[in-house]
Length: 448
Image (cartoon, rainbow, N blue to C red; front, side):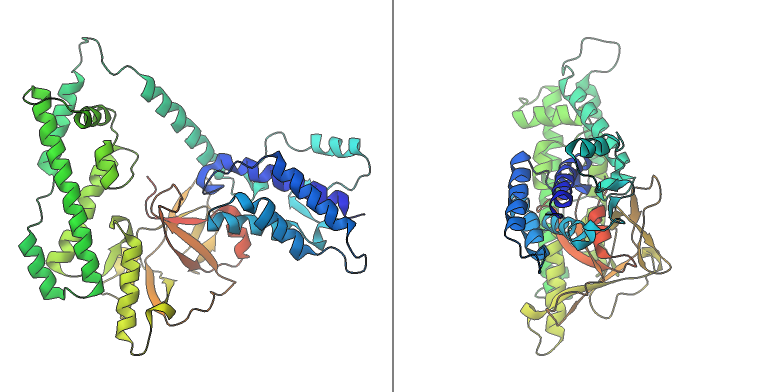
């Protein structure tokens, strides 16, 4: 069949791209799957069988080919919905009758060779660039910076983990002295505890059965738990360093991690991920500040999404609030919708009539055209772009979103897994949404 060689080349190209994208971390794949040669062989065998049984008048059934590649052969390994979307997008933009045209190319310079023999194919492949631009995989050139940063961070982490923990009697301060001083400094800055009856009184005045206020109560309880554990650990650590109490396993871990400027394991389990202890502690103070203002000064006009333990719960509470405000609406049929405003957080002086304003989202993989309120290509060497304020609200419709809009997933942290996934927002674009899917565009609440 004349279609056989181009399809074989296309499947092989797809196979190398899905493997190579793994090195770009979350920009390439949310979860780095172990794609292997048996996936490729099964796909090739399927294409061969399909062409053998093909009716010459009808031609190739592309719906079948795309489904088998995107959902079955490669998609069978994929567990993340957004990774599945990426695979299906590759199948859609690379497999079709258009791939037989002379003008077709996967990316500038990456064409399907129109040659006859095996040796000529190999020659063509030898002439491809030795170092591929990230654009050959659908990504922006900036993805290379991400890849190299991740690699450097891994090497440094490994070096840190194998260095000896007990230093000799050098001229500098001992580890214990350094950590003791850090513990004292952190205890001085640690926020005061929430007094339960004060919180209760404030909630009663604000309406304690209101969905958003129930959410606030849960968040404050979690914040209080973090403050408690940090206070106990730091106080005990000081006593252990002085020799008053025994150094337990948890305190030893806190000592080692604090000396390396990392977050102690006990704290991380009950709070949030962060790359360094400094960032983590600053975030603790900022989160507490938001809750404190919210409970004692009233509901904020704009919410800092990163500062919430459970952002999904917040958006659900907002949906309940909107549903209750409209007679005859049912929560099942009410879905989230959003508009990106031109204003930044400082310009907002009053809350919206319905829904909530949120800020603090960063675009990863694209930049934002403020004038026209739509997605734009990243600027060279700028990895993240802060989005303006986003108005999140709810509409009484379960219809699918406009296919011309890009559905951009929101994650709490740069690790894009189901654990850090919050929801999605729809963004305007002049290019096809497929372009941004291949770019791996997502919104992050925190880029540290």
